[in-house]
Length: 199
Image (cartoon, rainbow, N blue to C red):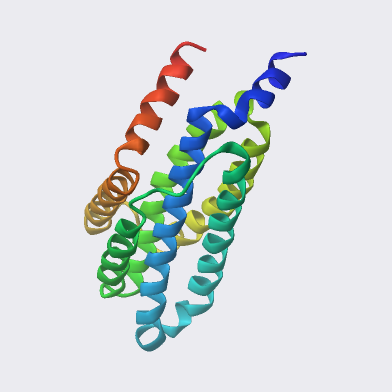
């Protein structure tokens, strides 16, 4: 049995794999909360964005369901503080939606940029320890990268206002993940970094 087979067979009991699934599931719930609030505002303020926002919300709901489907076999459970995302996502979605189209696309770009960095790190680990989850994350990453590309094409990320808002949203996103997972996202990042350092 080669290393990949051994890693794959032990994956269901791997704490890091469970953390990856749990953190990603929490993040998808946060994204759903954000897009729902933005859609509510867009209906009256900028209906031209509705088709994209609704399609993106559908993607995030599918992603959440895919991560949830991975949980039972691997002994993972949803974050116990999931309600944090309901409040945090509502605030972030409402606040950026009030800034208009620009606020919406900057929010998406900032959140997806933060998510992309996490997913790249996760895939590198999962390819060795749970290839099935790695493939799921890789497929979801394609959707997230498409959201990022769409949003970045609709504003100048180098403008000072965009940079400041983007930095704020990225920081809020990281804090929400940290709180919603009760610090597990930070422990996960440390664990993945340590695994990478030691091969």
